[in-house]
Amino acid sequence: MDFVIVTGMSGAGKTQVINALEDVGFYCVDNVPPRLLGKFADLPAQSDGKIAKIALVVDVRSRDMFAEYIACLSELADSKYQFKTLFMDCDDKTLRIRYKETRRRHPLLSDKVTSVDKAITLEREMLESAKARADYVIDTTLSSPTQIKNRIRDMFSANADDSMMVICTSFGFKYGLPGDADLVFDVRCLPNPYYVPELKEKTGLDEPVREYVLSFPQATGLIPKLLDLIDYLLPLYRQEGKSQLVVAIGCTGGKHRSVVFTRILVAHLVQRGAVVSTNHRDIGVVTTK
Image (cartoon, rainbow, N blue to C red):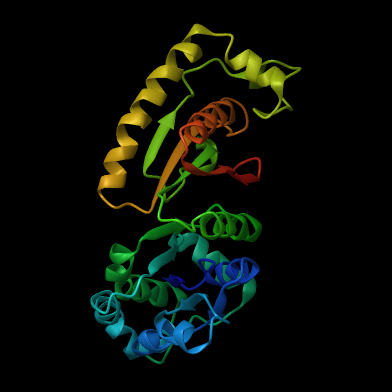
């Protein structure tokens, strides 16, 4: 059975998560009180095989009942249920913008909590231990709804076994760091194709850009050092029981050098049998192998 418990900040993308999980065959239930987690965990055994994959959203909409969340997770683990927890996060500024754009009411607004800013601060305090307990943390600050859904589909359709998924992300420093990155590599030290007129509008997915980047000894010398470091680190992360590792490679705009090096890293990891998801964040391309 695949059993996923989704929590996180209101406005961080839990709706996109549920939609994506339904697309890959999960039976999804939103706004579940923590005390009912065990009841849903028993559902597959009671459904004659009709339900095998379950995803539940548990968050602060359950108000005071959410205080039981960590204790209920511990009870599930003690009862030998196999499950994963996914925490959706986003920076406060982006959450405020999303609430303003959608005009939705934050679930913690009340007579005492009278502003969205105060509600977000309170929610983050309430969720601190849930984030620390999570198997997966995804920061959606700079992600579109489509990118969120694609990433979730990749993670949970390719994650049938218990392998650690490696998520390789190219990005542009000018747009901000990926908030969920575990390892960040900066390739802005390499010659920039942006200043070559015939390459400016292309990306690292185009062969002329790749050829240009790899024509310099600085780039070809960096490749074995980067791959050797990743090869050394991956087994250590696996030994620690990490479910996902996010490796981010950045250049200035996230369209040329970072894309070339992310593709090189992905090809190397796939050759070694890793489960890999690729997200070229700032050109909007997501694939899984």
